[in-house]
Length: 275
Image (cartoon, rainbow, N blue to C red):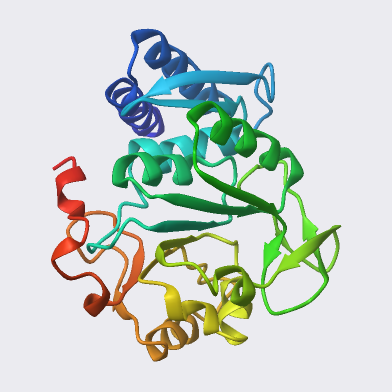
């Protein structure tokens, strides 16, 4: 049974890699790397952190590293489209909180035509790849290194060997805390993507003035370490409507939106569905 499940998982990876690649060489590169990831499981991959460059649909050049975290991010963001929005929005400014190596920023920017991208990521190793991905694709925007949260000068960030699992902790490296209120006060934000590994509760517990100019939010909630009901209630009290995860007939993430801000000009997200 385990072998059957492993084969089914790899077949799904291979189909996703081939479907999302713009060239056969990129497809083959991804398939081989995904196979290595499945075979190694939690063990360190051969040529760990070797850089790869692939060309993905629609016309994206993506740099990633040969490690479990980057490959997991590719699987979730590109193959499974886990951050596909559940409702229409205006593609003005995209804000990516917990940007990692920039896969979500790239995918959303290319698919929906955002005019500007603001990406924030605390891990310096991830930021290096994030900057490269923005550069080679000509993404219009800015990158901030740090964490988001209530106003403070610094916080402690615990990096992880699994590149998507770093988080604010009692121990770690000192990183800047970025206050969203002044950062976004002059922005018209069409969409915020938030995946900040449990810091979402602290973020919304403070000032939510930054939400005033935000039309929609996609958020990955972490129920084992945050009070999800509290996070939802804070966002709803700020005037956003809630679309729960996995409620749309596909694996949608938790989504919040202002229906009055979209109108007839909103981006119809259904046109990008694979179904």
